[in-house]
Image 1 (spheres, rainbow, N blue to C red):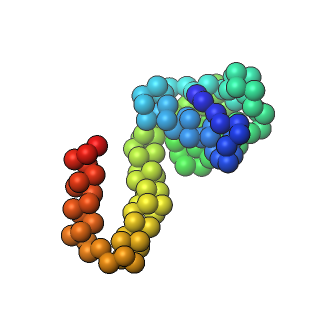
Image 2: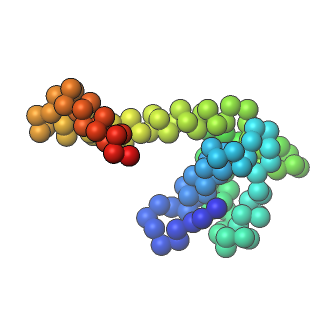
Length: 123
């Protein structure tokens, strides 16, 4: 896990994102335990309440669950829920803005598709 203490993204969001990244990368598989609030707080010098706030976002999103006396565990289907959420966010944060700007400057859907194809070819 890596945190940007000087950046504009709040630490609790970074905690949630880092755990999500671990799930997406396969570091935390379905039904596996993730590091505790205390472990993360101690290792990265973050307030435990901040770490818990980030974890609670993932509990709300049904990515992890707290098992009393055992810790936090990755739920079945967590990876798929994260991918779905990120695709939705990508559409809302990037695609809609891209289409709005393309429309403003007179690009058609065909023009935009050609530009995207070109981008993939150069990637």
